[in-house]
Image (cartoon, rainbow, N blue to C red; front, side):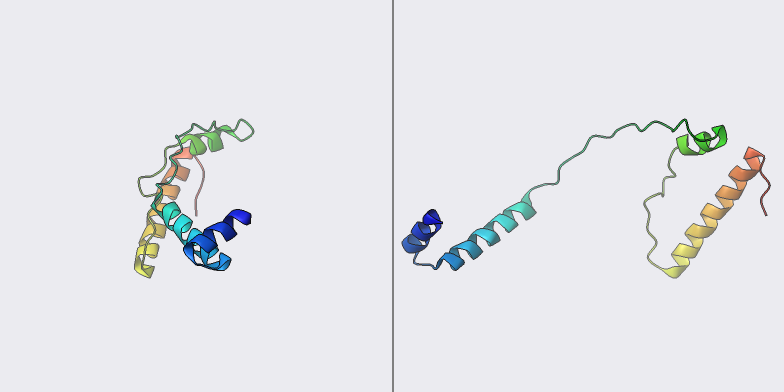
Length: 98
């Protein structure tokens, strides 16, 4: 606090003005700092699920796993595509689908 009053008296600002200036300067510096990169990790398939479920969990992600549709038509198309793919996998697994 003593340092802030010294800085404020040197600059001719109130302590509140110095605090606001510091907050603005640190928030803009934080906005310019690039995000932290986190290395990819391998997560094991759980052994507590059935072999069929292990196979589904171990399957690679679809290329569009993080595509978020922006229109209702886009959502319907994505849901239909996932439904068709899921039904095909169920048939390959030997499960009946309705």
